[in-house]
Length: 452
Ligand SMILES: *Cc1c(COP(=O)(O)O)cnc(C)c1O
Image (cartoon, rainbow, N blue to C red; front, top):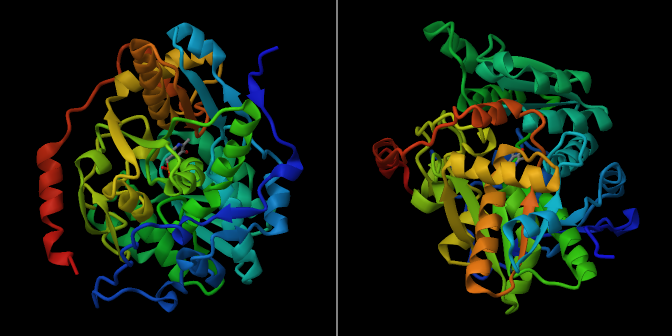
């Protein structure tokens, strides 16, 4: 019988995360303070994050032990399955072998709880009582709401007001797990009040919600802030995905020629790919591909510059491929991929050509998503569907070449809360967006003044 799923036992959940900072072939540019233009130190971040996470941000230990209470919670859904997409292979009539690591089996439906649980643990240990964060469509907010519940922390989620009003189901999920969900801009913070004074009907934005959550944490002693992507420690926590996948590929008796992940801030792609990159640093032949939307093409069209992490220009400066923090991407359905930059670690590795990148329009993405759903059954998140598009194209290329190829991609989440996107696609209402060249050029020009 040919296997379709490759499964590990609970006792095979990794005991350590893989820290790529130990193996980087080129140094990572430091995070810069926007005022002093000097690298920031641990104390600059102490109002926002517990010290254990700040130290993980800069650690160069190759293996960082996963605390037992975190592994214990991972056991609720980890190890996640590795699937061989045999039905999709048949539909595509390809000699390629397609594998996917499915992170949609977590209670929140995506990979995000892998870091949310770790972050909640370290905050709890540091005596923190409440976490504040922002969320757009709600994937990150729901992951953190779950994690806070499991560690008995309070959770305040500033949710972009349009999403709060138009996408109620993830809000209800967060409330079910006990989080307080506040439509942003709100009257809770100075940042929110300033926006409301100018425009009482402001629909909000992720940038505004970040400012509110950061202010909330900075002004309350018992409260810290939590971020769902981009930072080194977030990517570190996600490496459980790739560490498991490497063992599961061994069970399948294969090694991937290409590893693929969609990229918003970079955490799910890095989580799957970094353990394979460790092999690549040692000479193994494996390609890594990040897939982004054409409407928000940070890697493929952005500039490698220092920029703010948020739209409101309040965070430290990160060296990344950026479209400019003031660039507001079109409202595509893959809301999790609408970030103006990408994780500094991913950008560095892309800059030095250890990682490739490709951008797709959303209709091509949804065509691949539908084909996948009809072959494999799982309805993918619109974000994950970007990885499916690339995996499908790799399989079709293998067919044209008449040569086998082993493809591994991250199915970062399911799309059960994104059915509006499928409705629009099925009704022929989904639009492609031209690359917003002029808007990006304008936004990037504004960055010259802030370079260190
Ligand atoms: C948030 C999200 C992403 C994008 O974030 P990354 O940090 O790039 O992984 C991708 N897929 C899903 C399902 C998400 O929820």
